[in-house]
Image 1: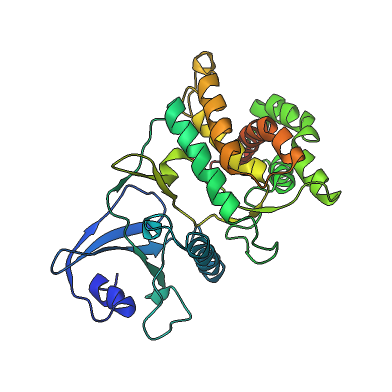
Image 2: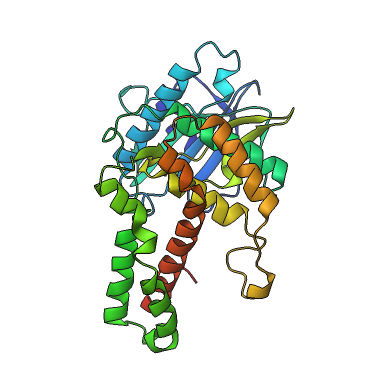
Length: 323
């Protein structure tokens, strides 16, 4: 790996780092906290995992568009700098906000001081998360369809995920199909019901929006003094249906257990968390159509179903992605 100071200087050549240390517990990108010599300013230097995100130029164009839109909409807010992510341009290539070094891709982001993330989803936290994701989508709701690209192709495309499952069934590469045939049949029986959003889009009834695609509570920064600061982790921001965003939070935040819990008797729905999230979300996502609002609960079912399709596909293929 290249010297991190040298990479940092590609963005801010006149700043001398005093300390560089690993930061956070993310399992996709490598992140480093850089503090200047006086100890007054901090930044996050990040290596983008191009195996997960091979479309680096698309990804970084997306985050630039989102960052500019956030800055525009937050003009006049005295605390605006702490409410969105800012990625520094390369010093000698100001049109680019990432650099390549030895086959790796790097970017530099402004560090947001006095912030923290949470992992426990209480009704109060869920309400704040709903407000945060709804506000995020509201701010970005006037980005025209087609301006952003897919950072991961077909990421939340249900029809594509079902096609992948069918391909896995036909190949049965690991010889596991017989043991899960009943699960395949059950998922395939629900396929038409679970692709409603794509049918409605083709009929011109359901719009595509700019969505986050990873709406977990730990992708929100909270102020240490109280309240929400901003939504973070923009690598999956791309066009999609709002059902994906509300549904993914419902899937992860409303369930009483982790998604890999083997004992189904322990699994239940935390209704108070669900209600709080939806109330928070609807209070800020003022752009929604009546049809979108009516499909919020369906979004939770749809995203849970999609995860089941993805995991079963991988199991039939021989655990090529998960373990």
